[in-house]
Length: 26
Image 1 (tube, one colour):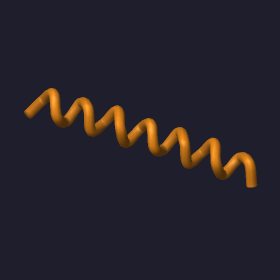
Image 2: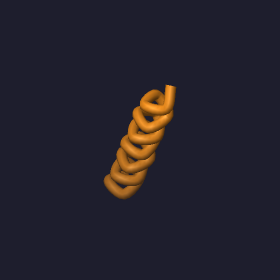
Image 3: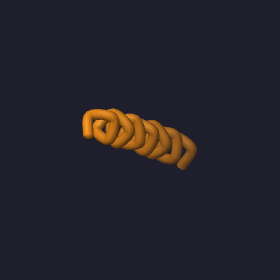
Image 4: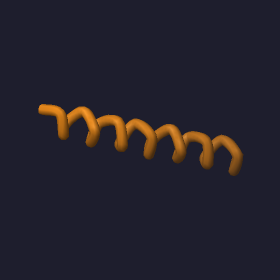
């Protein structure tokens, strides 16, 4: 359970960084 939550957290933070990077291009 903990491993799943940690991987999900990494996936979420990765998407947030991608979104911020995408918005910076606009």
